[in-house]
Image (cartoon, rainbow, N blue to C red; front, side, top):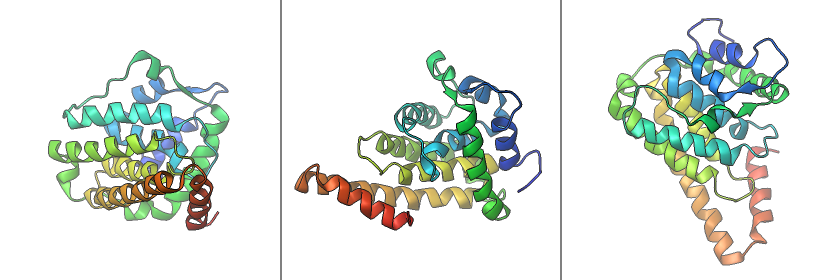
Length: 213
């Protein structure tokens, strides 16, 4: 895993592996994200749903916060603003450590592939386009359909990485992933409408099979 102080992995390790026993308020994360801004915050907020670790209860509140961030991205804002209630939300210390361990396992394999390129990602137009994708994915995450929030969370995670590392090529994959997530939810909603609530178990088993769980 990279030790560069400007790398995403270093930023995550600094934020989520801080000394102390207490939980980590979202406001403190916001104060320390620095010039990685939207990107790093999106990575952290999407991790609980994107990674294969138990994270019950995070999808809706974090989805709402990510939707708020998406609207600010679409508006072309340079700085992040969150309401007091959102800033006071906390990541549990034990959960944060587990989440960081899972993130380290992912980045140790792929971080060498990520680098600054395709400068569109740092432009206002690029930020707005990615913000629209984040808004759609955050909306999908908040739908009350069990076992389906991993796909949109992964798309947001990819966008966060692309923004943090200014990697336009990596961020481009988010558009493909977003289309796949919309297609997945279209199928799920169709099955729920045509087969009723009993289709949920079939959907969950199918998703587990695709994820190899």
